[in-house]
Image (cartoon, rainbow, N blue to C red; front, top):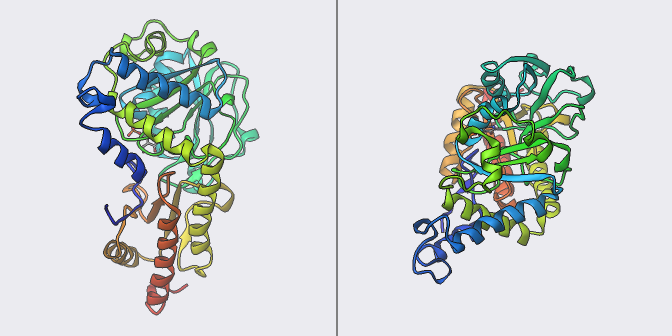
Length: 365
Ligand SMILES: Cc1ncc(COP(=O)(O)O)c(C=O)c1O
């Protein structure tokens, strides 16, 4: 067993139970005498894995039967292009809450005009806009937003309800909480945070939107291709989909989304508390009412102190705490598989580091 506290942002911690089960099933899957990676994606054995993952995703998220569940490749980044390729008529609306929404908008301008419904860029992406304040036009083909901003550590709690299709990049918080997933027309998420290893991107799309899709896009970039073939048009990423199924089993064993959300609230509260009780030694990046339950971003007074924190944290067994290279500072990513004990250990380490370095002038207020 490894003995590090894994706070990586993605690929990220997977449940130990899932890794052990995958190890057990690796050589001889379901008494077939081979691994799941070595058999045809058209075989009955694989088909059961594939279908079960689709059924489980649908039931656990409470999706209505209007939804198609698709397994794609190319990461969430390919969705930045596929969304406008398939749905942009003349113009579309983008809400900017961080680097990932900026990247999505940048791809969309290749296919038409974009308008920015709201942006928190001016305040260093510390906040989430008020849903009622978002400006959009009925001519916009859709509105795009990012539910959790992995780099800046902010997260939507209440979503806008526009009368145009609502599309959401949920890469870093899908399956982390109980929300009404049916309020969106399309949700996409790279699996490598809450759903499994990298290699598969989950797309949930309402049939009404699917019918609107541009038929003139290459087959492999068309949502219709994947919807009409149950994502078996070509060879799917079988191992990633199998692992996703194991992660869903584990999520169900934890008590489902309700229990997972409860646990995530507890975990994030422990770390935000350590920040808020440090008398300014640590400073949270996000505004209080926009704080993410998944990525806890914070800073220390100086670059030297930040480096010292990372070095001492590493020696104490904490991994993945450096902020994203474009933002700096510190970040603890606490996706579903990160245990409560890891958060408690990090909070204790933060208190100790604070105590030990309070005398360090650069750490004082
Ligand atoms: C919110 C969000 N969107 C998109 C991406 C890009 O995902 P991928 O690397 O799967 O293309 C990430 C990656 O961390 C992300 O956090």
